[in-house]
Image (cartoon, rainbow, N blue to C red; front, side, top):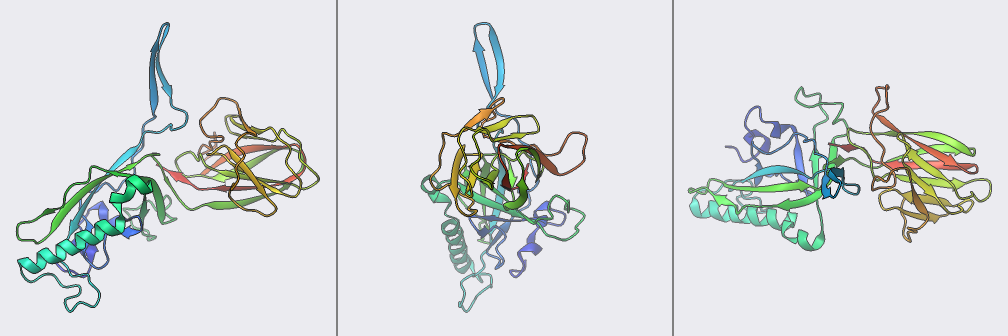
Length: 329
């Protein structure tokens, strides 16, 4: 096999060639040829189940959907093959395969170590979740759903479990390694999309939010009172009438940011999409609790559209903005 193009090593017809992956920013198809994803790697989306709590008490038994983590984690199997290719820049044998067993073993060891140390999988117990990115071509390939993947990149946050010890082939022609990536939320997300809804009078106002196939549970809502302070009673709810109500007065000419995932608010004189000193006392549940303060469901009843809808009730004139990122199964 040639050491120059990792894509040439993927078996004909394998879906692995339709996507590229990065874990902690490290490409799993190394452009230098040091390693690549083998066929058998999970590349297609998996729909998660609903996480439930089973109960059995006097007079009642059954299952109840979990509020704060409603979706089951999804697990993906990754199969990586290391090649005995010299990836050391400046080496006289750069991008060449080892010529004998000793040289191949040395190159394999170097490539395995570089992969392990650069991805830092061994540090996840201290550093937290591991970021996985799935990158699809922007071409109109028949094997890629161009509408779904037109944005090119989706990201998941989770952890690596059950990694194997790399297994070296007896002639040191390659070494195989496997690990399972657990997507703990069951969904993938894209970049943040920032939308200006505009200045609105007191009353109810519908907001269109671009969605993928999965609900959005971490949208940021920004409101700035434009004609004096805005009395308590601002309400944000989804299509089912479930959301949150604001129990405090919003100061005029300041942006008030509502982090729906963290149930936190913050404010600043300019639009700043964060809550550095979060207030977690002024947002109260409206309707049946769903874990996060607002869940935007994809699609609208009887309307074929990749958008969801929310409703904002202002108690005085104000400007509304929304930050959200599409979620996908």
